[in-house]
Length: 500
Image (tube, rainbow, N blue to C red; front, side):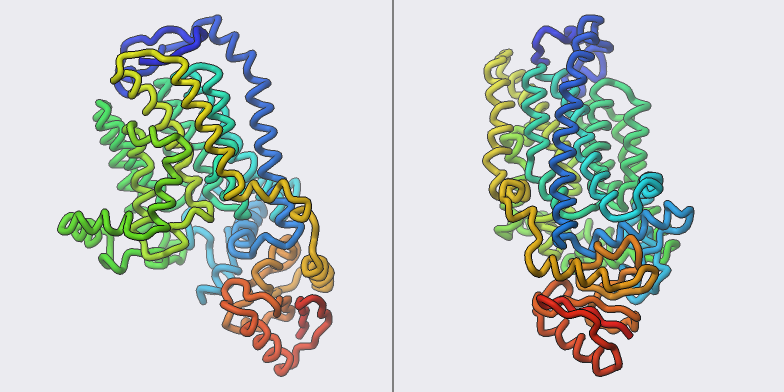
């Protein structure tokens, strides 16, 4: 069953009709013309969303709220690609005691970052990444709109697209500098929409590209395989599952070690087992442990509910939600509290899947009820937008309505003057929030507990920024450096510049 508004051709039988109760082989000429008429409106929505996301990130960069971990790491990697070299990330390598020539591919396997290199020929610096992330996040909108329009009609498509644009997972991703997660909404939207349109070749290309985003994307592909298999597409499901599983084994067992990394760096399940086979066996032996670990913490329960709430929980009625399940379990079964929280970018990996699952869940619900209720469809679609609006004050987009967000405070003004004291082309250790301002013209290392001997140091001795728990430690580090022969060339508002 498909809810339409009269602009789409009626459903035709076929295997994708079994999969998602979908949709004609091709739109009629009238529907195609109608789609062309919507392109400027959808493009305007994409442009507005990208502008909001870019504004959020660029203001954070300008006011010294962006961070070395992880913006500088990605900036260094993409700069390496842009110069036709290796994606070395000294800021990460030195912290892991693996040297200045540590490859980003050994940390997180994200070769897709190479696609961003040409934009560094236009502007070389972290601001480029922030703008590109904004475009990538907004780029999912047309495909989500197309999918929703086929299933529910034009007006619901706009409502759901705006709900996605304002959703809290997107807000948190845009707020946290730049991450490879920026690629996931676009690629998952393309994958779902192309599967839905029965464009298998396009879908496989999107799936293959998704695997290049991060080393754990194979888990998501396995989730898509499970969805396809359970909805009657057994050959495609098995294919996705084998590709996802094989790629995961290849990346973790071969490619990351070849790049100088250690897969154990991000093994967060030592409380359950030392490796993947042991983890699977432990969960089989004690399946109740799975539920205790998934929902045993209030933070986990809060995040899981927040993930489903933008689609008014109807995503739980769709087998498409299975595509998101491995990524959610990866977070909630871990021993790392930061992965459980809704505060960072992790939820951006699954946001489009759950919106699309919500659309499919509504269609399935109406099918079970044996009714075509356009009023109910509009209520649900409007409800997704209302949910997004009610969550705005809780998450990152709320900052945009406060004038003080756009202003540098005394500390940020002092930081801007401090970084001007550091010459270009040098190696500099910096506090976490200062590194992005220097990354385009120096080699930035994170100021941490271990002295690195860099000729320049810029430290914040009033705030306990990552990785320090309090300001006492960076203050002590500065005292030690001065005693070792460094001289202060700038000091204001707790920002200190040292030169050896």
